[in-house]
Image (tube, rainbow, N blue to C red):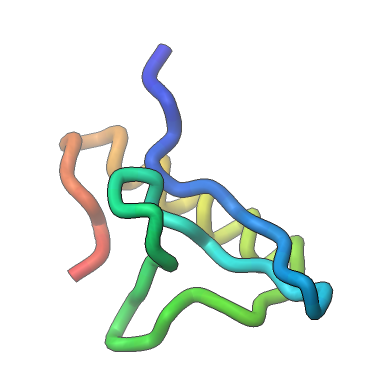
Length: 62
């Protein structure tokens, strides 16, 4: 089983960030960092990104 590339991280203000585990940085989509999210939203985004990335081995983000 392959490790997931995108994980979520809690922030001190109670929000959540989607993190790219290859870079250690927040993931970004359309020029927007995936930060300051509700936990459920962050997890849903990470799940979709991991599913898309598993299909071709590349990041689905541009």
